[in-house]
Structures are given as structure tokens and as C-alpha cells.
Amino acid sequence: MSQNNTKKIHFALTKIEEGSPVAIPTETVYGLAASISHPLAIRQIFAIKGRPNNHPLIIHVDDLSMAKRYAFFSPLAEKIASYFWPGPLALILPKKDVVPFEVTGGLNTVGLRCPDHPLSRAIIKKHGSPLAAPSANPFGRISPTTAQHVLDDYNGSVPVVDGGPCPVGLESTILDLSTELPSIRRLGAITKEDLAPFIPQFGQSSTKTSGTHKAHYAPSTALLLSNNLEAERRTWLEKGCTVAVLNIADSTEYAQQLYSELRRLDQLGVDILIAAKPKNDAMGEAILDRLTRASYGSTNLYTEN
Ligand code: TXA
Ligand code: MG
Image (cartoon, rainbow, N blue to C red; front, side):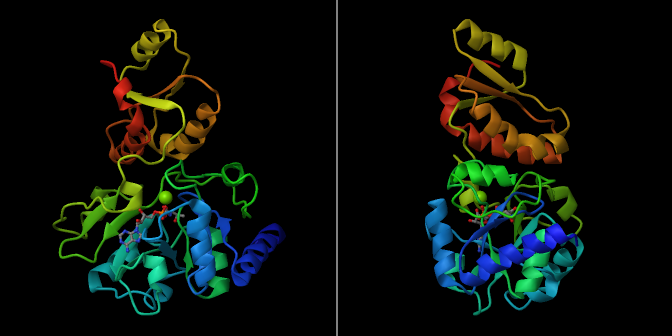
């Protein structure tokens, strides 16, 4: 660990131990973190984000053995966590009593994941117990994938540990193992195909989680999705609108850059953003899910393309 990283870890721990939320990097997006044993800090997370307090938070652990102190792991859950952690997969499991209901929004289940990021894992390990961390964006807005995004979102009022750009760029896949049949509640970089060898039969995905609201991850500018960018662009230019285009062919790169690009394009002050529909592969499906939600309020603008 470089001296620089040691300082960052120390900074985060100071904030966490004094009960102030601090934004930390993970491989997916930046999270707004607080210790699960600091009820006031947990309440502040909801206040800072403007998030309804019945929306459960994911808790972040350093490894499987820490996770098992906070949730009941079936043999299947243990197998899946051992295989995919650290990584962009959150598991919903029955919670143990030590997890406060403030964290789970009153639910008897808890979402857990072990992030694949050296800074966040070192912070959790040194703290010795889990950190609750939702994505650090204001509720309903685009998740942050750089430290600067967090500074921009809160005018510098939220402390941030800078771990560089998030390598995955989309929030984790959420797998619900608390119901009879496992179900995917949110798509992400761990795909259904990745999980299929462990799960012979999936149940219906539920849409109750906050990141699964129809309108989410929204830029302020109207956003359209298109398979035919050039035609769509021309249509709008001819109507006298100003237009900006988002077009990244490779799905991994598209995911990495999606939120940064949506934020950048949103600042341009154009009338319409047009995003290329992603490739029809597993990561493309997760990107399309986010783009569809981000464009939800703009769908009345659709043309033929
Ligand atoms: O990649 C990620 O998961 C990021 C990074 C920071 O780890 N975190 C994240 O947290 O995306 P958040 O709170 O923005 O999204 C977590 C989602 C929410 O939609 C929440 O409702 C759902 O997980 N969730 C958490 N605990 C749950 C539970 N017990 N049952 C059902 N859904 C749950
Ligand atoms: Mg979120």
C-alpha cells in the first residue's frame, strides 16, 4: 500500500469512526459509506442522498467470514460468495440480529457484497465491521464513477476518498437468495449466464428495489435511445434542436464510461441526448437497463429510429 493510500485509508477511518458519512471508491461506483453501528451516520446517508428511509442499504464486507457474522448463508449462498467475491455481486440473505433495521429499511433480509477495490476493502478490514454504502449519487440521479462526480453532486460538501475512475462503471448485480427460487433484482457485470452454473432455476425478478424504479439514473437533458444514431440525429437537427450523441461500441467500455459520459453530455446544454443502444450481449443488457431508466421521462419524444 503506497503512503498516499495509507493516508486515504486513515482519512476514511477517521470520518467513519467519528460518525460522518464518507464517499469511497468501489469497482462498480462510488458509495456513500458509514459504519452500520453508527445509527446517526446511517440516518445522515439517507438525508444527504434525499433517499426515502425505507430503501435498504447494501452492507460491504471485507470477506466471507465477516459476512457470515451478519447474515445467514445457505450452502448455495456460501458457494456463490466464495466464487464471485470480491466482485460486483450483492447477495440478499436473511439478516442476523446485529444488523440494525435502519440499514435494511425494516426488512428481515440484508444485501451484502465484498467490493473488489483495494481501498474500500482495506478501509472495511481496518474498521473491523461492515460499511453500509449506497451509490453516492443524490436519489434518482446518475451514480458517480469518479471522486469529482461526488464533489460535483454535493458542491464539495461530502468528503471523498479518491480511488480513480471505477473500473466496472455500473452498480453491482443483485441476486436475491432469500426467497424460494433465487432471482436477479438488478442486472450488472455478473450476468445471468455467469450465475447459471450455480442456479438451475431462477424465480421471477422482483422490481421492488430502488435502483429498479422505472425512472432512475436520470440526466436533466432529455435522453433517447436509438439503433440508428445518424438518422435520429438528423431528425432532431431538422426540427431545430441541438443534439449530442453517446456511442461506444464495446460493451465493457460503454459500461465504464456510461455515467461519466451522461454527466458530461448533460452539461453541454443541448436539447436532446441520443445514446446508441448497446450490443446484444450480457453487459449490453445491463447497460440497456440503465439507459432505459435514464430515458424514462423522455420517451414521449420517441421517433421511428
Ligand atoms: O455496486 C453497488 O452495489 C453500489 C456500490 C457502492 O457498492 N451500491 C449500490 O447501492 O448500488 P444502492 O443502495 O444505490 O443500490 C442497492 C440496491 C437498492 O436498490 C436497494 O433497494 C437494494 O439494493 N437492496 C439493498 N438491500 C436489499 C434487501 N435487503 N432487499 C431487497 N433489496 C435490497
Ligand atoms: Mg443507487
